[in-house]
Amino acid sequence: MRTKLIAGNWKMNASKPMVRELVAGILAQLDADRDAEVMVLPPSPYLSLVHSLTESTPVLMGGQDLSAHESGAYTGEVAGSMLADCGCSYVLVGHSERRSLHGEGDELVAAKFVAAQASGLQPILCVGETLEEREAGQTEAVVSRQIQAVIDQAGIAAFARALVAYEPVWAIGTGQTATPDQAQVVHAAIRGQLAAGSATIGGRVRILYGGSVKADNATELFACEDIDGGLIGGASLTAESFMAIYRAA
Ligand code: 13P
Image (cartoon, rainbow, N blue to C red):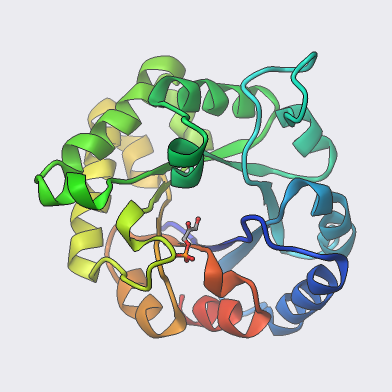
């Protein structure tokens, strides 16, 4: 049984008043009887504030990115150990905005995955195809290549302490969600690829769906066999829309 996870990727959106209001709203709507976890992924400067507001609550916290390096002369970068020090237990690696806007390739993403685990963080490995790749019938090949790069560097056993997020690039921030069938096919392929290396790990790894998830499409998506929750962007910025998705899980 894989516990559903609803994770809010705030991207580059925050201010102190907004963080206080959003976290208070999330905490007020948490339901101890509901078997789903909630995570927030704030921009780095707000991690300590969010940690202070959530540390004695069930709300989990992660970073949005980390450096592949441990420490040193890397101006502007944030190390996994720093995220852990500020209260994170998770971190996104390979989000499509990092891949496309910051030129992160499969090898760097895999190095970040390894660096995250070396700092005691659980990486959430983001994968997904562009519209062009989907239309060319390459969806599964692209996603499989992105996953394989991490298996090659980190080993299959590393996925016992990691999550995967399938985020079709064409669905991110566009209002165009993958249909439950489209998403389920890719989720099953990801699980199958991991299960080929280890049946136990394939069966246990949580695979989130991301890309224009809203309360009104979440129920159908989360009902799919291999979809274990959501990675939410725009709809995670107000407690009302985020927690409506949580209730859908
Ligand atoms: P949207 O929910 O805004 O489409 O963003 C998805 C995403 O990129 C989450 O990481």
